[in-house]
Length: 283
Ligand code: NAP
Image (cartoon, rainbow, N blue to C red; front, side, top):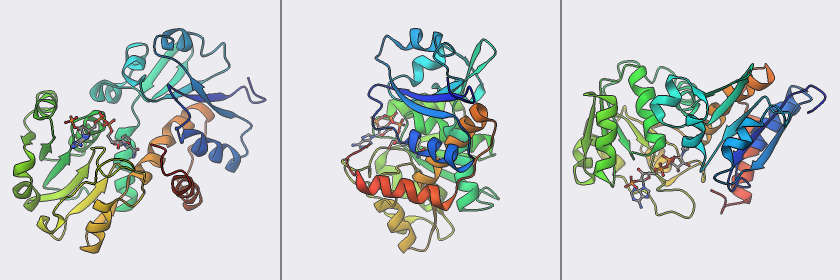
């Protein structure tokens, strides 16, 4: 318990790699809130006991990271977003009830709103690469913004088919071999795969195939400027990066725990960029 009675944490296993403490402790300092945000390493199998003792440990809520996001969903009262994504990344105590959401949906949408204002006006079709948890958040978010057609391209086609079944007829599935044709119609290209991340193979996309009005966004945030974004910018396309999404997805948790809606400032962004540059091996 802190002087304000407010503390939150990020729960993971391992948890050392999490950049959430950097973000939330920056906001605590900026708004002079005498709260705390800590890392909690919780082994698989210990999550239920840890969450049951959240209040006793002085916590008003928590972020949840790998490998606990699916288990946290089952151990809480999730909202529609967390249910649609199939994973919870933000928890808070509402009296004795542990509630959960998934802030990747708003992180993705709000980052695009900030980086490319009016990006969703007259949006035609989008191509989304990947079919994991991040792709579910992106698909759910794009459908709630009224996107008419979304082409999912994933290495393992069966995973993309699962998303199509979950999200309905606006979602189509295409193979990597069909990607070139899909790009020609795409107003928005989203990378939700791990390709292009430090330590992973590069993502090689023929951005020349995209129309000139297309927007390209990459969820990978380490490096902040991926090869995909660099290629899109060289072509003069508008872009939104994964670091922006990481910062925007953190806003809701802070607001829930500390009663203050924080701002994503250039200073915070610079702090994260410096951290990523100094620890290139961190996922
Ligand atoms: P995930 O569930 O493990 O999904 C990984 C995806 O990457 C799958 O579609 C997988 O395809 C694909 N993939 C992995 N290696 C590949 C390869 N060699 N070739 C082709 N496809 C490959 O992970 P996730 O939780 O969705 O996260 C995906 C990425 O989004 C990560 O880089 C993560 O850091 C990022 N992310 C960023 C934010 C943010 O705030 N910026 C938020 C959430 C996630 P298969 O299905 O074939 O395995």
